[in-house]
Amino acid sequence: MSVCYPLIITKNNLVSGSTNTYRYNFSSNVDMSNIDIGLGSASIWFSWRNITSAKSNNQFSIIHPTFAGNTTLNLTIPDGGYNISDIDNYLRYYLVNNGYFIQNNSTNEQIVYAKFQVNPSTYTVEFISYPLPTSLPSGFTAGSAITFPATTRAPQLTVSQVGFGNVIGFALGTFPSSQQTILTTSASTLVPVVSDVTNVVLTLDSAMNPFAPNSKVIHSISPAGAAYASLIKSEPSEISWVPQQSGWRQSITIQLVNQNLIPIEQYDTDITIKLLLRMRDQKNLNR
Image (tube, rainbow, N blue to C red; front, side, top):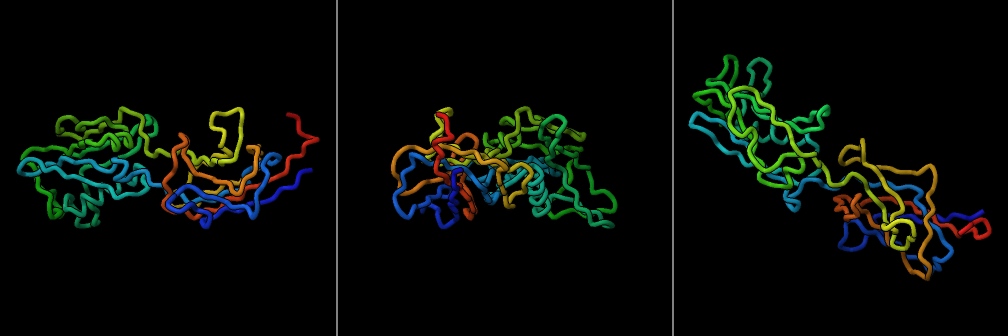
């Protein structure tokens, strides 16, 4: 029976200037010719940002009716990790913070006239625009910036960034194409790609899988069900042992990439990865 040796990789192994690459230095040169390595466990923070200025997917506009006509509100989402409800929360925050709301005098509920929502039945993101009344309803107080149009009209969404359009599944354009007088739902026509990371793939530079073009992959971790800024844990019930490239090595390097093998830009690089190393049992191994 082969003996396993644990190797613990932490933030202390982070390669300088990187947010996704970690190097483990052996105490002396190691002959990898008779060694298999597998993942024992991994703990990483869900900290990669899906909306950033660098990705050019953080801006959109709302055409908001006013007494004088319309005003265009240009929104820039701060860099971070967002789902569609978070984007809607930011839209609501912006409208309220800038005075485009009315408030119920009895309940203090603040009402805005535009929102995003997910429709899981149709696999779409929807932009909902509510028509503004021509005057302040009784029992409400107007926000500092809102004014009421001469005729009932609803806000519009303008998508001018391809990147933001990809996130919500909208092509470039204005939705609805003309201002409506009734509640209107504009649904995405493309598949929304809210995040460009659906799996965290661990690669090891010494790995050798002759049956796969991505021969350095040793494990894949799904963030499904994990909230942003939470700890994602993976501990395989069965170790997938991966043979290593022949030769002597002073170190091994592990990298976190997405499902397309693009390096992930982690915001929090504090990880714990336990690799298991074993000497191959030649007499029980058929190759």
